Image (cartoon, rainbow, N blue to C red):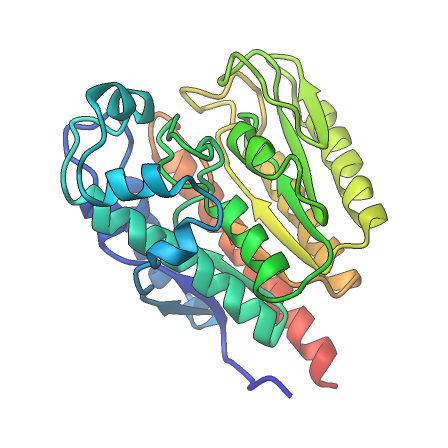
Length: 315
């Protein structure tokens, strides 16, 4: 029997913020602001905050070109490659940051494989990273790496990637396109980055300015597809950049609509006893407090669902 653990594990490291240059366009403060918010909650004991180790090279190359991995680790990416990733001004701290970020995702995966339930990484959801290049603020693809580790190391047969970020999970789709046992579902705004779309197993597209009603209809469709696959593991990319307040989103989703999305996903996980890993994904609201609110809602809902999940299995 798995050991009983008090609180939902969330992996976090200060380098998630500090590893990005202060002058970068990417809103790096969202990580430290979010953990401070979660720790200040009256029921903060529902979370168990853990520090991730660095991912190993062997874990990275399960989903990425060894040549690309080594060039990144040795600080030898070209200016063109760095520009495509977009986390500029570039800083050497991005190397340990990326390794910790990937390590947090892998640790959350290992936890749910061993214990069931729900666990999360307070960063990541790096679905724009492809096999041999990074893109859209993403260096390595934590979703694809975790899916491949689950299939190849942990001998799972069916892993569903449920990507509900406003942007298509193009890198995840291309890395996993010929992988039996990995189902890629991407719900995204059609008129948004990446402008040259990849082909997921299921691409559910929303028109710009779609509201809660259209969004939640597609969420239910995505969940139905996932359930029919009968997955042994869900990797949930839970970006909140579909919020109406988001600078990059182009959708018109309310905080309540995002909350309902999370409720639907976690109800599926609990009802069908599917271990689930939560990846943060995007969130670029102005002011950033709207993003923090939505991510706080996400992890609170995840912790509540994890409590129901683990209690139902311990009875």
